[in-house]
Amino acid sequence: MNALILDIFTEFAKGVNFGATAEPATTQAMQILNNPAILITAIILIAATIFILFFLKKVIINSVLGGIIWGVSVIVFHVELPLIPSFVIAILFGPAGMGAMLLLKFFGLLA
Image (cartoon, rainbow, N blue to C red; front, top):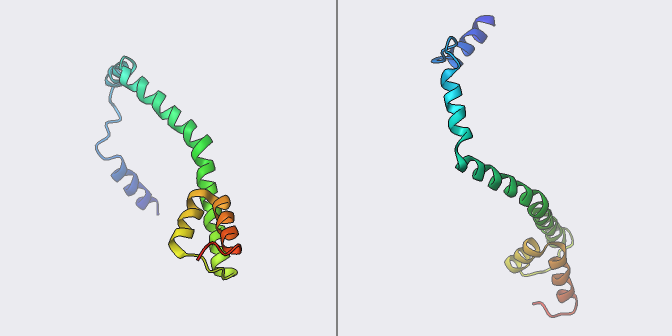
């Protein structure tokens, strides 16, 4: 078992020079520190993360809830809705879209 672990580590570490000096790493670090593209990229990534966490998370949850409600309405309760249009509306507008589709069906305005 130990030989297998040693073989895996040896294969993983192939080509790594453990006796290398830190000078090349320092040069690379200085190139990164003086590069404004890195700063701009970091700011864009942070802004994208904030956008995803605060906005898209709600949109995705809303879409998933709409799909679940559509599935329960069509499969469990056998509500006869137009298949593709009702599914698209449920995914785009979530539970509110599904509620509107059910109201239209109730009042006979939906074929």
